[in-house]
Image (tube, rainbow, N blue to C red; front, side, top):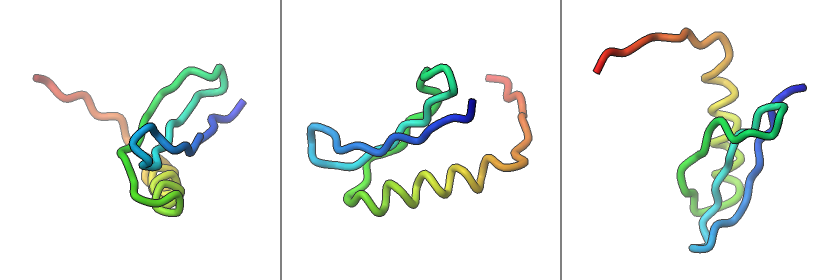
Length: 60
């Protein structure tokens, strides 16, 4: 099952999104946006960026 983006208004009145995997586990959370439209655009940006993204290990 594909993941799902959920867009919601937080307690401070800002809009956020979270990406849930098919098993409903949260796998990513977006920053706070002033408008719902901006949060939706944030979801779309993540979709575009993730397509074909490489996995890179970074040492700390």
